[in-house]
Image (cartoon, rainbow, N blue to C red; front, side, top):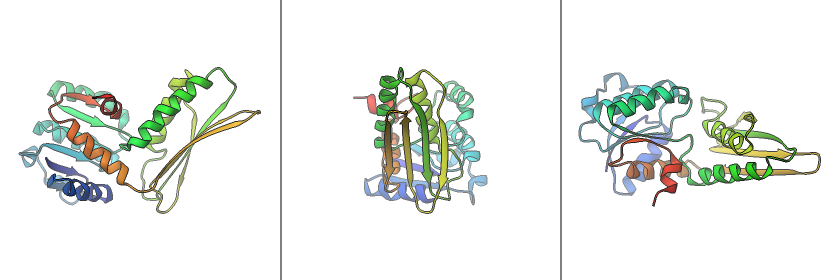
Length: 226
């Protein structure tokens, strides 16, 4: 598979290493130094684009891929308020978009478990909170993963989205703590990433999965497929 990397920071380089080891080929690398010069024609021959850029660049990168007729996998967070507009663009273009606030399979299992726990506890008197910790270079706060977790829990509780507390510390790939507290007891669920590898492998898996598909997809679609 020929891959264009839209965003070539730490995640982009991590994806390139793992993709190359798996037999894929990165044929285009785009970052802030050359983005202004990139046109849709530059994606000719590309099978899929993977975007790990910045919140203010993600939508333009999606539009670039759509104009080139290239499926795009987006791991950038902080732009999802524009998802309804982007979804319409994808549908009108007959394109393919795979987005996720977190590509780690473990995190997405964590989401599913969190929702089920919220459903089971919804009639009890528990206070719900979320804490997320990431490296100091992460731009958005709260993290996209924490927001998705909060929305998932709210759906299970059929109530309001719980509050999120964000911390930024050096060299922390990502930790998310979900806490249900009452006067009687406390329940905690935690997901701790030890490296960026889970995110990168999930993005590459999504890039292979989206080939030949049309529409807007998430990790739930991938995990539930045969």
